[in-house]
Structure formats: structure tokens, C-alpha cells
Image (cartoon, rainbow, N blue to C red; front, side, top):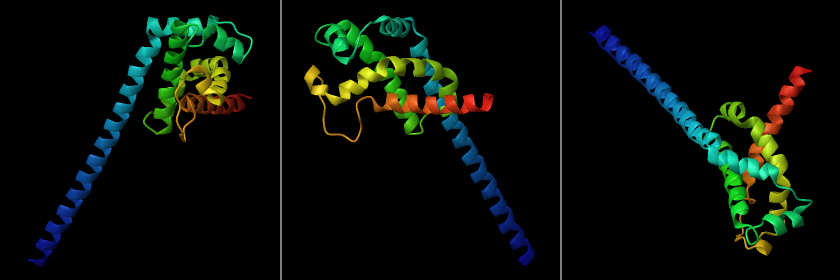
Length: 172
């Protein structure tokens, strides 16, 4: 009789371990699927003609320095271009924030958006950094915060740059 009770307890324990393992794997797969779906939703925005036009407009803008940029394209002087600028920067900023909080898989982000992120930050980063230094001068509202303006975009850039360097080192 004792042996039967022992076997029963052992089988129950094994069943619980199997059930918990299955549950953990299911949750893990659901999280990966959600991350992939979120990134694909973002990628659809990136691939959209509207976003591509915004991006191209930004690449076609000409300025000599931070002050020149704000005179030509700042929100008070050129609201449409400024809206495109903020939209594109906000897109990359959002991806960076999600990446920083581990809500996106960095390998997927790298594979889909690495090159355009690097090029976009090289073009937009100096202006965004300048804006951080004097946001109120151009009518932007700011508050005391532990987060710098568009810091997610810069985080995304730094992560993609680091991976790009690692890849370059492996190739040589």
C-alpha cells in the first residue's frame, strides 16, 4: 500500500513538472510572437509610402549648422517639415524605448532596421542633441526628467552601431 501511495505522489509530481514546463514554454513562445508582431507593425510604418516620403524629405534638407536648421525647418518657420521631422524621429525613438525595455528582440530590430537607423541618426542626431541643449528656445515644452529628448532614438543608434562594429571586427 505504501508503494502505491509513493508511486501516486511521484506521478503527480512528474505531471506537475511537465505541466509547468509546458506552461513556461507556451508563455515564452507567446512573448516572442508578440514581440515579432509588434516589430512587424512598426516595420509596416517604416515601409509605408508616407514614412518613406518623410524620410526622403529629411535626407534632402540642407543646412549648415544647428541654428541654420532651426531657421529653415523649425516648427515656427516650417511646420510641415518640422512635423515630418518629429514623426520620423519619434518612430525611431519609440523603437529605442521598446528595445531598451526589452519589449523587442534586438536581433530582429538589427536585421530589419539597422542600416536606416544608423543613417537616420547620423543625419538627425546632431540636430536632436542641439535641441536638447535649448528646447525652450524653440517653443518645445520640457520638464525635469531622467530621460533626454529622443533618448530612445540615440539608444537605438548606439545599439545598432555597437553591433555594426562587432560585425565589422568579425569580417576582418
